[in-house]
Amino acid sequence: DQQVKQNSPSLSVQEGRISILNCDYTNSMFDYFLWYKKYPAEGPTFLISISSIKDKNEDGRFTVFLNKSAKHLSLHIVPSQPGDSAVYFCAAMTSGSARQLTFGSGTQLTVLP
Amino acid sequence: DVKVTQSSRYLVKRTGEKVFLECVQDMDHENMFWYRQDPGLGLRLIYFSYDVKMKEKGDIPEGYSVSREKKERFSLILESASTNQTSMYLCASTLRGGQGPKEQYFGPGTRLTVT
Image 1: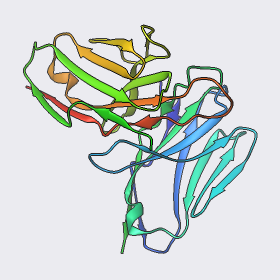
Image 2 (image 1 turned 180 degrees about the vertical axis):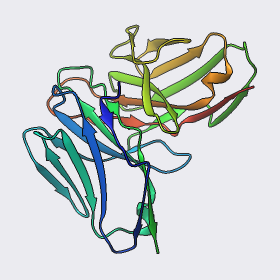
Image 3 (image 1 turned 120 degrees about the vertical axis):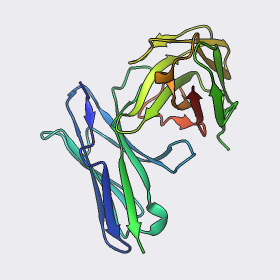
Image 4 (image 1 turned 45 degrees about the vertical axis):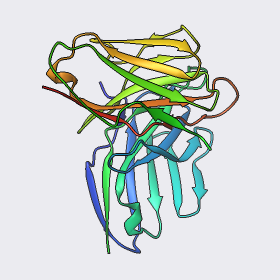
């Protein structure tokens, strides 16, 4: 049973508009959430994270929102740029573990010029 | 600059062959991980190690083994490769201890094809 789910395998957005990528989780023990970006033929790179004690974290064009009661988080990219086209993975972690991450299945974002 | 390297970018092996995938990190990280990435399934954890000579099974360890003889090197071994092990293999490392989500740093991946 997948503990971290990304239900949209793909998303297309026009350049300059907002991209919203969604992620749901089932394990209430998760207390940190991370987003990774992956280009083809490269390893994933860390993008942004959020602690479960917060509901928002912002870094430049990227903002992550956490709704703990709904077990839902989202990544907003504003404004979207063609270079943002990549696969985005949501991941979750329980502190105190060996820092194992549980990943979602990913969402392919395409930003159209 | 953080660096995780993997021995091969592309590998083609025959069914039944023994396959070694090597990963080296230069960040003095205690924790190292092996994942496989498949379409629609995301990244799934195969094995991880939190210290030299220590290993723990991840979610899908069947058909794989690992070796960690030195802190900087973590090897994934396919004892007898099968076609269902055709995949992208990703190595990652991170610090142990401290507070907060120490993000994992990934290597570029090895695309393994088993024929």
